[in-house]
Image 1: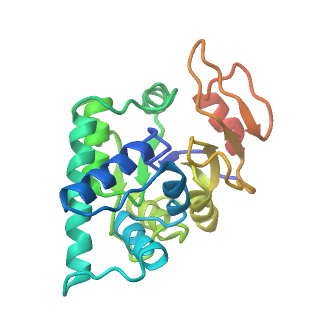
Image 2: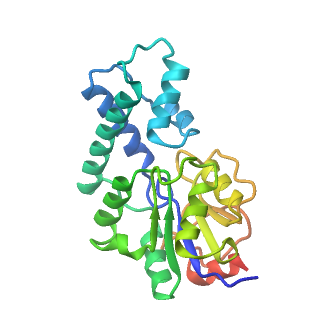
Amino acid sequence: MKKLTTLLFDVDGTLADTEEIHRQSFNRAFAQAGLDWHWSQALYTELLSVTGGKERIRHYLATCLPEAVLPADPDEYIAALHAAKTRFYTETVAAGGLPMRPGVERLLREARQAGLRLGIATTTTPANVSALLQHNLAADAESWFEVIAAGGVVPAKKPAPDIYHYAMQAMGVDAAECLAFEDSANGLHSALAAGLQTLVTASEYTQHHDFSGAALVLDHLGEPGQPFRVLSGPAYDPGMVDVKLLHELHS
């Protein structure tokens, strides 16, 4: 088996608990547009089965508001709503309203120091990724990742494996030398379909998902004094995901 060389990270729910900020940002965009649409936490949990913000709005309209009358160009209207939502989201992140999940920054820095290559494979928009990395890690944090595969760079979003294939091709690596990090069933299915071993850190919005096939499922990556809890898979000490644990998991 090939040696572990590369870590590929999802973003929303994996690097940070972004989904609640996304939900609030959608609602702010709807209100700004004069719409009475409101996505509760329960509804948003259901809508997360659909990947992609514009796709999520379309699904909401089709399933919850099938009689809604949209402007002549509904695609343009939905894109404008999504663009407004993205502005609200990035403003919140820039204001320091969204910290990284436990253990994320620590592990990224340890992995870089150990010479592991880093990449991102996500369905969220590039602006969301940039805001999160710049305002929570470092001004140059985007350069930590050799590729940031985000948004619409591939036609089929997760659970299709396309975004992972794109990232691996861009980095010149194959699945046997990579480990993926995800937080949702759709993300896990995407990574597995690309042939990747996957470590899952379940989030508030995804803890009820079926993570069958994951190499390890945790509540987070762990910090000193804040050990992770194993939800599925073998037990590891000392309760923090470090480079040594990643190599053990990969092998």
